[in-house]
Length: 186
Ligand SMILES: [Zn+2]
Image 1 (cartoon, rainbow, N blue to C red):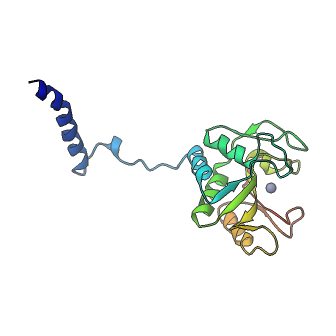
Image 2 (image 1 turned 90 degrees about the horizontal axis):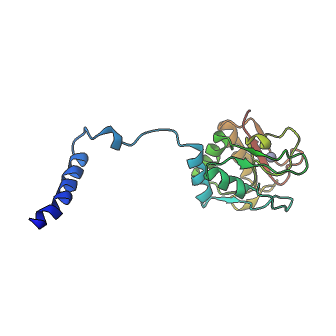
Image 3 (image 1 turned 90 degrees about the vertical axis):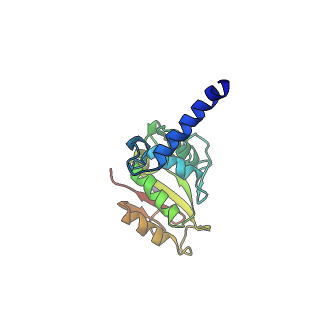
C-alpha cells in the first residue's frame, strides 16, 4: 500500500508527459511561441557573444560607468544605458535602440568579429545620435584596426545601411580615420 502511494505521482507524471509528447494537438501553452526577441534578450545574447569585444572604458581613458561594456551590461539587465557627463555629453540614461542591437547581432551571426568602443557613452558632437541610444562606434573588425588598410569596414557599413542605418561614417570622413560610426534614425 505504501509503495502504491509513493509511485502514483511518478506514474501520473509519466502518463502526463506521454500525453504531451504524442499527437498533434498538444496544449498551446507548450507550443513554441514565435515572437520578436526583446531588446533585453538581444543584449544578453550580444554581451555573451564571443564575436564581440566591448571596450571597458571610454576611448578618452575615462572609467565613468558609460563605456560600451557598461552599456551592454546595463541593457542586458533590462536597464537604460548610462551616458557620459563630460564634454558635450548630457549625462543621464537612455534605452539602446533595438534596431541597432539587432544589426549588431546580425553582423556577429554573419561571421564578423568586432570591437565596440562606444554606444550611449563618451562625448560626441552636440546633437549626436549616440546620446539617443541610436549609434555605435567600432574600431576593430575581424581582428584588424579600422583604417584605410582594413578591407572589411566598407562592407560592414554597407550591411548596416541595409539594416536601416542612415548615418554611416568611416575612414575618409572627418574624425573617423580610425573608427566607423553607424546610427539609426530618430
Ligand atoms: Zn559615433
